[in-house]
Amino acid sequence: MRTPTSWTKVNVDHKFWSHDRDLVRLRESQPMRHPPASPMAFTKLVVDDLEAMADYYCAVFGLYRGQRDAFDNGVEGEPIEELSLTPAPDVMHGQLVLLKFLERSPAKEDGTILGFTTADLTALVERVEQSGGTIVSPVKAFPDHGIRVVFARDPEGHLNELVEMQT
Image 1: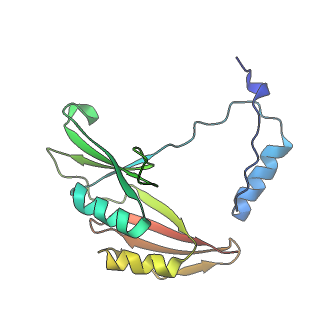
Image 2 (image 1 turned 90 degrees about the vertical axis):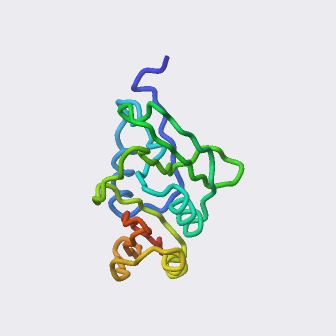
């Protein structure tokens, strides 16, 4: 078994925001004393209409329908149904899972904001609007961070943050 001091750092070739670059430099300058944090693997979004929301996220973000499951004894013993949205058609599980409580309505509050990156914010905004979503803020440029950002709501009102990374 590896000890915490023997964990290996992996260099990742990504564009980082200036704050993230500073954190990476700080981490690289110090020996790693603890194992890395568990990576986030997926997000579950509670929805009211699985089919309509799957149609929206697949149309707007190019996702595919993956595995669908129903559980009689799901979250806190309540029956649920889930649909995994995947990055490719031959993948069963994805990073975004739509979850429907079968015996109650989902909460309608802004407890979760799903973030998506794109190379073409204008085209993504058009897909949001064509698929029943709503743009809720003007596009804002943050040149110091090399990004443009806009917020949207999906057809059920969930917030999405749409970020264009600029070169």
